[in-house]
Amino acid sequence: MVEFLSRHGIEPSRTELQGFEVTDVLANPYRGAGEITSRYIITGTLMVRVDDPGLVQKASQGVFQILPRDRAPGVTEESQLNKTVRVVTTVEYALGE
Image 1 (spheres, rainbow, N blue to C red):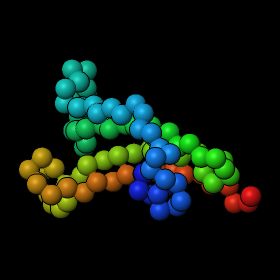
Image 2 (image 1 turned 180 degrees about the vertical axis):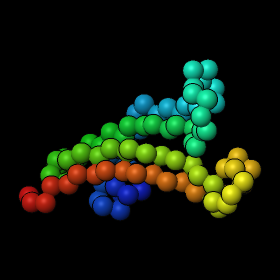
Image 3 (image 1 turned 120 degrees about the horizontal axis):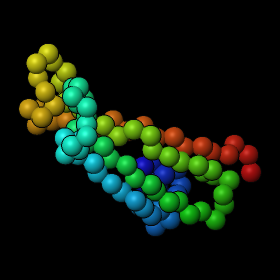
Image 4 (image 1 turned 120 degrees about the vertical axis):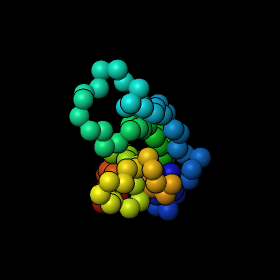
């Protein structure tokens, strides 16, 4: 997310990571008995401070998933060394000055 904002003119010194949390789903004693597709849930908030609030109006991260690189029957994510990381981010911009 910081790299994305940097490519769009917002310096990393203007950002601050707040409230980063990692939850291990397997450590939850109240989890359901069904199959777990993602072991870890990672959430975080990134504060962005800008002098001109017309650039980025709102930014949020919705989903962060660590998946197996190769999706093959009978091969689990835990058994693969290489992973695919999926991040879904929403950024709202102002179009005018």
